[in-house]
Structures are given as C-alpha cells and as structure tokens.
Length: 300
Image (cartoon, rainbow, N blue to C red; front, side, top):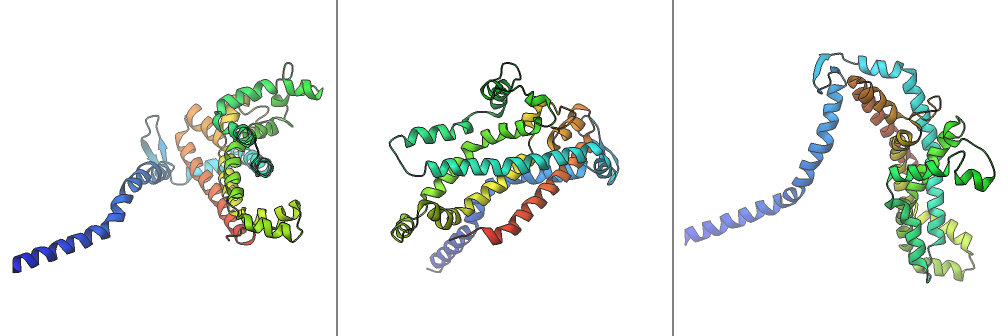
C-alpha cells in the first residue's frame, strides 16, 4: 500500500515537473534556431570586427577599435550613410502613402474586389532582380516607355539628380504589395458599428477616415514604418543591379559600400566593423520611432 502511494506521489511530482518544463520544451527549437542563426553570428561579427581577418574568416591579429575608427574616418562611409538616409526619407513615406491609398480604395468589397486586390498585391510576388530589370527597361533613355509617355529625354539611372529617386521608385513598387495586404487586413478588422454610428451622426467618408479609420490602424502603420525603415536602410539590390553605385557614387548605400569594401576589396575586418555600426544606426532609428509611438499610435 505504501509503495502504491509513493509510486502515485512520484507520478504526480513527475507530471508537475513535466507541466512546468513543457512550455520550455516547445520553445526550445525556436531558441536553438535563434541562437544559431541570430545571436551567435552577431557575437561572432562583433568579435571579428576587433581583429584583422584573413580570407578564410580567421582572426589573425587584434586591433581593438582600429577598424571602427577606419570606418568612421572614411568619407565614402559617410557619403553612403547620407545616401541611405535620403533613400529612407523618400522611400518610407512614399510606399506607406501609396499602399494606404490603395487599401482605402479597395476597402469596400465589390464584384471585382478579388481581381483588384490581386493586382495591388502582385508586386510582392515579383523578385527584386526581376523588378530591377523591368524598371531598367522602363527608365531606358532611348527605348524606355517612361520617357516616351512623358515626351522627355532624361537619363534616369545615369544622372546624379535622378538616379537615387529612380532606385526609390523601384523599391516602392516592390513594397506596395506587402504593405497593401497588411493595411487591407487592418481596415477590414475595424468594427463596422463604429463606421455606421459615425455615418448616422452625419460624418462623411473623409471625416470617418480621419477620426476613426486612421487612428485604429496606427499600430499596423507603425509596424510597417519600422520594417520599412530597416529594409530601406539595408537596401543594396537595386544599386547592385541598376547602377553599381554610379553616377559619381550618388547611389552607394551602406550595404553596398560594405559589400564593395569587404567582399570585392577583401577588407574583411572593415566589413565586420561596418556591419556592427549599421546595426547600431538602425537600432537607434527604431528606438527613436518607438519614442514617437507614445504620441501617435492608438491601441484600442
């Protein structure tokens, strides 16, 4: 009898211990994945940024902060930082406003809603390289359709004034589909009784949009703004495919400059140090965005 009671008590303790550990067991695969592919690479990158690194990725000589001083003293890095900030300042509001406009236009379900929604979200299914080749043809100074439609002769990708905005337009078109889906889901998640009550009170579409719709989707807008800041600050694809940093380095961005120095010119320690600095810059921008969140984002 005593053995039976002791055995039952042991089973109960084992069951309690299992239930205590069960959430951690479920989270263990995700934790292992995060450590292997996020935290360890970051720590390894910071470690290598303090050394001279050879072509095999081996740290050979300790330099301390010399790589960081070399990056900050390089005028090309500062030029790339300015270009990335300009690119982000143009790209983030443009893509958000266009996506929001399309989502507001497609908010009400109509007979052709499925077709319009598919067309609006289609850019998300097109790879960046394919998009760049499409825009390269559109912006061609001799046979491009844009110059033909506008009746002008502009060398979009080879003019200092237009090269960076052309790259921004390429990325904006790519981001529209992704952001449109999020904003459409947020709009259709707004309770209909709020809209109906405001309509009964005599509020028009513009008033309802400004006082009800936009405040209720600010969490989604804030999320898209943060992800768009990161994506734009880390942009390199359009530069690699379309301009290679030209004309006169006006389209060299941070990631492209890091690629050029570390991969092409094999200054590996410089590249490691620069990647850490880029992380800190973007992290600071996101922190600043979260400071703004308290004023403009409404969770209700």
